[in-house]
Image 1 (cartoon, protein in one colour):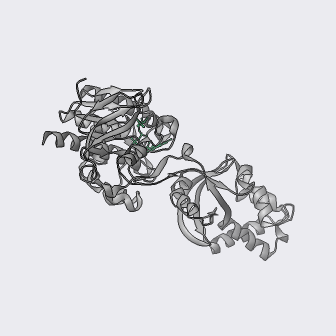
Image 2: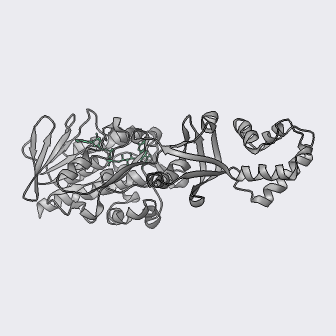
Length: 417
Ligand SMILES: Cc1cc2nc3c(=O)[nH]c(=O)nc-3n(C[C@H](O)[C@H](O)[C@H](O)COP(=O)(O)OP(=O)(O)OC[C@H]3O[C@@H](n4cnc5c(N)ncnc54)[C@H](O)[C@@H]3O)c2cc1C
């Protein structure tokens, strides 16, 4: 290939979209991917099913990114969930919307999405080079002039889009290179943290409950006894602590709080549908109806089997005590425990288990209308390398596709201008 007009670094969700869009605008485009196979992360998204996006309305969608969501408004206004669904439909990928507004390919196969995008970039005339890790961005007098691949090979171009992803699940190729590349040419990197990540808890309770999944529970995050956040849904116990959808969602706040050196505990409400009074009525009724039953047996109607020994131990009621002998005080202890089963958070898992990386290229140094660097002419950013991170539910992939779309078009149009 003669000198490309646009170089895209990283062939993930954002890079494929950016490269295809740049080429579709008529720019000769070179896509450099470090791994031997492109889009490795995309292929494992959504447990292999790829939760592409979400049908939430724009304001609600943006709220799922926290304060930095504002930065995405322009990109979403140009290319949002409906446009993504229509685009994929044109590539032959039909989609379905499931509970919570989550959109998946109808085939339930993430690989279908990755393969369709790859076919499309090739059809647009993009040159894809795999096994080509970019080691340096080449800048002269404040302008992009090209990139250098590890090993020394130089590709010259006046427009470069960095779409190298975050630092999570590094085995997929996303090892944080983009942060180093951007920092070396003067960009500020907001400190990176693993988020949407499982949490580690104190003591032996979690390991004893390993494999137990609790549905329809409310988990509250408490910092120095003050509620900081809460979520309702499903969680899971693991050998090190807790995971599952609501824990991952809450982890965004927990990670930052732990890093600030503050103590975090989780309070699990095992009976969120019943307030204290209703729960007390229910307990009284059970104790009354099964007066001769042992406390341990009575709990079978209230809790999953695995949780019973933990409950018995923490509530301090002898397991063989007959229901009719349980005192009002003991009943109150049980009621309190059912509404406030506590776990002390001691830490979080590392980048290798985090769905997303928070932090990254400071969005104040990037023009939200074009994804262009405000510091280096001809440099653009797209995807997770930017300091934006959203909840689970399809928000992160949409952000990668939307910023990729905008960066690809803007880079090609700037050349034409
Ligand atoms: C297990 C898992 C499941 C997920 N499921 C979902 C989901 O269902 N829905 C959702 O919305 N989000 C999901 N996410 C998050 C989502 O996958 C990411 O936010 C998204 O892939 C980011 O896209 P990206 O293109 O910015 O980065 P990536 O997809 O990480 O792609 C970056 C690419 O750049 C390449 N690269 C890195 N450095 C270099 C270099 N120096 N030179 C050349 N190439 C380089 C990498 O090899 C990689 O191919 C999931 C994440 C994980 C880990």
